[in-house]
Image 1: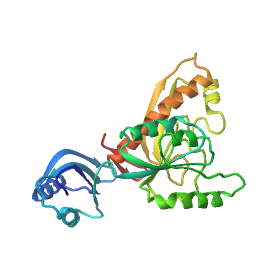
Image 2 (image 1 turned 45 degrees about the vertical axis):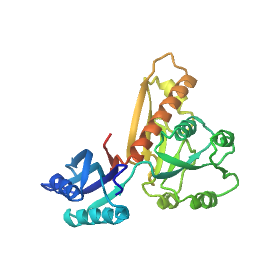
Image 3 (image 1 turned 90 degrees about the vertical axis):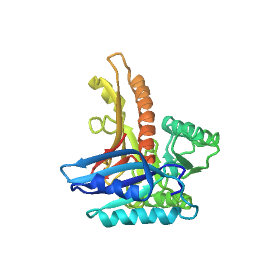
Length: 289
């Protein structure tokens, strides 16, 4: 702990009396000054979640790593098991963005990255089409075209993994990446792939969802950002939002409204994840916004 930039302590463990007192007591013994503190108890699972942002001042150089390890080990020995305890620091995430041909989500992330508003470093953009290469190039970020035509899914994913492996990534972001990933590929990045899709699912599946929605006369357009699991589009939800529409919207106008809400919801979800505000609890999330 370097005593300068804040650190984040993340704890989840079985619930019992006195946990907040015990955890903050350990932080106090390690000379931590708590800046923010959030807690939640999942009553169904009887599990406790806590996020504490803190700083430690006047810590001699060279003690940073040792002190961090000592704090984590003391907490692990104190908390009921099974307990998850880790320290994080916002802004230290490395990501790759996977896209196909739609530019709206990728463009939003590239702009935020360029202005240091994303909370992570985009190491590369990868696509199964070359369409978004020029856009990515304007931001000085490597672009990799990994075509899928003529390849089995296994062969394409092997080529994709070969491109991604050297970057040592923390997360993959699917910014309208229109390919279904295999369980084997997802397993390499368990709880580390984030996707965005329109919230018509499961109501309007398949081709032309906005045409289907138009014909049904829907009155809201929404988007959902979620972690990717083997169950297609059923992973834990991180963030959602909607915008109202009315009978005057044509399918193309509905699609435009959908693109606007998708890019904002994805950016919000990533900010929450990169600031370590999201805990997984089965197929649910605990979000300290």
